[in-house]
Amino acid sequence: MSVSTRKIVAGLFVSLDGIADAPEISPHEWTNDELMGRIAAGVAQADAVLLGSRTYSLLARFWKHQSDDIPMAKFLNGSPKYVVSSSPDALEWQPATLIQGNLFEELAKLKSQPGRNIQIPGSPTLVRSLLREGLLDELTLNICPVVVGSGLRLFDEIADPVRLKLVDSVVYGNGVIGVTYSLSLN
View (cartoon, rainbow, N blue to C red):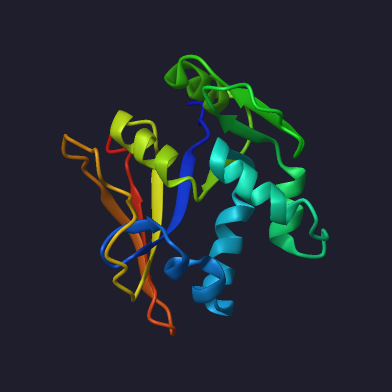
C-alpha cells in the first residue's frame, strides 16, 4: 500500500498578459457564483494555507474580521497558516507558523504530514518561486479578460522550461478562463 502525500496547490487570478498583482484582476471584480463554486470545491480539498508574508498581511487585514458564515472566512481563519518569510514578523492572524530556513525541507515535512492539500491563495511571488524550484504540485489560473500592461508577472524570472499537464479547463460566463495544471509529471 502506498502512502499518499499532501499536495501544494495554488490558485491565482491573472490578466491575459500574465500580470498577477494588479487592481484590474481583483477576485472581487471577476468572481461570480459559478467561479465561487469552483473555488469552494478546491478549498474543500485543503486543510492548510501557505502564504508569502505580504499576502498573509493583506489577507489578515480583511479575513480575520469576517464571520464564519462566509465559507472562505471560516476556512482561512480556522486553518493552519504557514507563512514563508525571511524576517520573523509577528504573526497575529492565528493559527500561523513562520517557515524559515530551507524551504524545500520545510515543505517536504509539511507534505509528509497527514492531511489534505495545502492551498496557496494568491502569493504570486511565492508561487513563482515554488514553480521555479519544482515544489508546486498543482496550479490553477483564473485568466481575466483584461490586458493590464505592467505589474508583477507570474512567470518572470523563470529561466528553465516548466512542463505542465492540463488537468481541467472551463470558460465562465463572465469571460474568465479557468485552467488547472499538474506539475507532478511522474
